[in-house]
Amino acid sequence: MTSTPHARPLTRRSRTRLATVAPLAALALSLGVLPAHASADARASVGTTAPGLTAFGAAASAQRPALDRKALRASLDAFHTAGMYGAYSSVRDGSARWDGATGVADVATGRPTRPGYEHRIGSVTKTFTAVAVLQQVAAGRVDLDAPIGRYLPDVVPGERGRLVTVRMLLNHTSGIADYVLPAFPGILEDPGRTLDANRFRHVAPEELARLGLAAQPVAERGTHAYANTNYILAGLLLKRVTGQEPEAYITRHVIRKAGLRHTYFPRSPYIRGPHSRMYESMFGLIEPARDYSVYDMSWAGAAGAMVSTTSDLNDFYRKLLGGKLLGPAELRAMKTTVPGYEPEPGQEALLRYGLGIYTMRLPNGGWFWGHDGGVFGAGTWALSTEDGRRQVSIGYNLMKHQRFDAEGRPLPDPVGDALYAYVDGALATPPTPAGAAASPQREQVRAPRHLPLVDGPLAWQHLRGGATPQR
Image 1 (cartoon, rainbow, N blue to C red):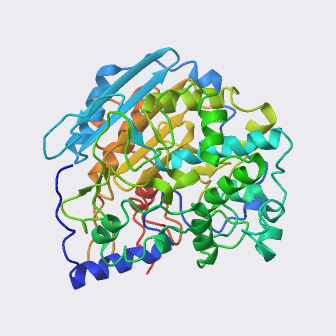
Image 2: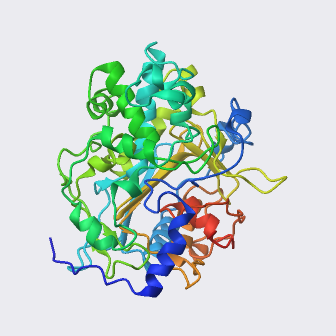
């Protein structure tokens, strides 16, 4: 490892800025992208799927053209030119595929990125965990609508244990808060020092669950509010009903069943295969951005600890959406969605969350299924058409690059724009012209209240919608 300096001391102005940003959510470090609060009633949405999905299915995707490799290359390079250190991606259309990389894997040496790098995938792990739970539903060991207290009475006692169901955990409508901020005390005051001090700390999932359950909820039960605690509890549920550690069960029954060769839960703070360094900026408060590719990921567990490659992620989602990992009933349950945020009156939510998977509409007009994730220094996004034919997965190595003014308002974000344009263009019909890669034209979504400044495409999209952060 190259040596890195301590985070620069926080000035009064920078402390004020971070204090303005932090209250937007229980978490400024989420493993995923979703809003921490939206007031739509989840119960009213049970049984619905995203509007337009039926019409956008196999018939529409069959009309998609062959991959435009030149346009993909130019658009991925535009992501690096905009300010991303490095990225690697896999795109597929049926049997056709393109793998590319751009930028550097090590800013000190200039080592270039390569396709096929292993990468920390953060909350994409949640899809794998949800598949494992749904396998237990199929086996009759878990009831989606049973209270979690039936299975974990010692972990979730009392009213929560009686009223929060397994389904509520998987679609983030439990009303349970996130654990990450209390798990990293001091991170808002001195993020670099806090992250360094916890690099090799091992934390048990039971402790993460305790922290999340003790934290102040940001939304009422029945309302979508993304929280990693839900998936730590899902992992403990798996352990209780299978008698195996959740990582071991998911490895045997999900990863191996999908035939993935470079996807795993790390057994140490180290990634075992070729990989990039992974740089965390914390909105400019760690300057220069610091490498956290070596990190004990027990703090993420079944919610976000996995390592994979972009090619493996495409394999996984194609097999999942194609019915190879779950039965028809369980796949339908997984794709039953609730609004991912509260839209304006008369507008539809452009992102809807199912059980460990979401569907979102991109500017190219299509609805796509998948997930994204962000951990310290590493971001991932994987999306597929509903039939799994057209796919894109991308990993990138600089997180929380966004900047804000003294009032906490987001400044222009060319890096986020270029990422969004790359993914949109990779899935578009016809493909997005390479020259338009850095300046996508898309619908703006008004930010929901309490929008977290999390790493991920939806948060960036909301922030660019012009909303002022809530103090």
